[in-house]
Amino acid sequence: MGASLLAKDLKNERIPYWRSKIPRSTPQLPKEAHYVKSLLALLSLVALPVLAAEPTLYGRYEYIALPEIGGEVLKAKMDTGALTASLSAKDIETFTRDGDEWVRFRLATKGASNKVYEHKVARISKIKTRSEEDEDDKEAVEPTKRPVVDLELCLGNVKRTVEVNLTDRSSFNYPLLIGAKALREFGAAVNPARRFTADKPDC
Image 1 (cartoon, rainbow, N blue to C red):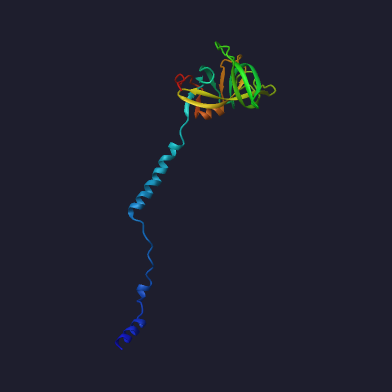
Image 2 (tube, rainbow, N blue to C red):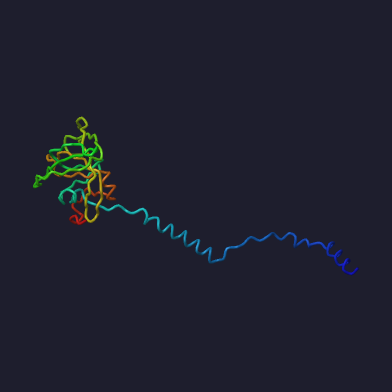
């Protein structure tokens, strides 16, 4: 009988009001975890300027080597007003090899050898040429078609493969023109007031 009375008392026992209102607690992260989380957030902010690397500043004119063209080192004009790169060439002739379009040419530069170079054509571009190599000169002729090849260029100690169109630039002062696309490949910015700021090509 004692056991039954104890069970009855337990059944009728009510939970105190103050205890029933206590919310269930959620697991709390230790202080160390909060510290690590804050530290990671801070490091991510510090790393942002590193990821967005600053461009390398070059002059209006620079020396550039062509490892695939006999290692020739040419004076190049860094032209933000032009889109593509252009190499002075002559005797330009396209032909087919194994179903692909190729081009053979000779360099049209002072002191260049008479060697014939052959490269696979990446594409054919249409270029609107100016009557003079001056960004302020708006006079243009009909677009001309030029073969474009992928060439390795070495600027300072940086080597990049860029698209270069072939045309006779012997009437211009600089046999190699580096346009905006190639400048982006090199991560380059141009200061028109400076020239030959990079060391001689060493790639």
